Image (cartoon, rainbow over all chains, first blue to last red):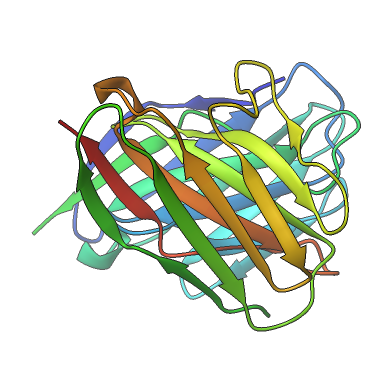
Amino acid sequence: QQPVQSPQAVILREGEDAVINCSSSKALYSVHWYRQKHGEAPVFLMILLKGGEQKGHDKISASFNEKKQQSSLYLTASQLSYSGTYFCGTYGAGSQGNLIFGKGTKLSVKP
Amino acid sequence: SAVISQKPSRDICQRGTSLTIQCQVDSQVTMMFWYRQQPGQSLTLIATANQGSEATYESGFVIDKFPISRPNLTFSTLTVSNMSPEDSSIYLCSVVTPNTEAFFGQGTRLTVV
């Protein structure tokens, strides 16, 4: 079951904040966040493994609400380097380690 | 962590031909995954490659079109056979480490003309 991401696209000015949401109709046991810049492979940001967990580094953080079956990625005081497409990924039923990715959220940070 | 070397990084191929993509990992991993990313789309799993057994294909992907080899625990290949323009995509290999972090190769950007 593919997780649902929202919004599909965001345009920000440098210094503004953004929130990207990822939700699933199935039980979530972990949520993975990746950022992909144009023409490059996805790059790992963080994993959240249990309900209530919050993580962050630099000005990018995430939370995981297991009961609501959703996760949110928070980008604070955005920088130009934050531009890219953000994907959340979850393990599907019977997964052997492969991730099922959402459709992505395209983030554009303007000067 | 894991470092994955994937090649070629890009290729332009004639329809009807085949291309083999190679993926080399710097450590032994049980499973390797092959994804396809069509332009502007998300990543879709093609198959899971286990060493010593046949690959497991996802719905919509078949072995005749995407044969996979996994001769050892650090290497895998994906072949895109009898290519058509619809096969133009980015193909990525991936591995998952024990802490469940997924690493990706640099991707192969395939254009079929």
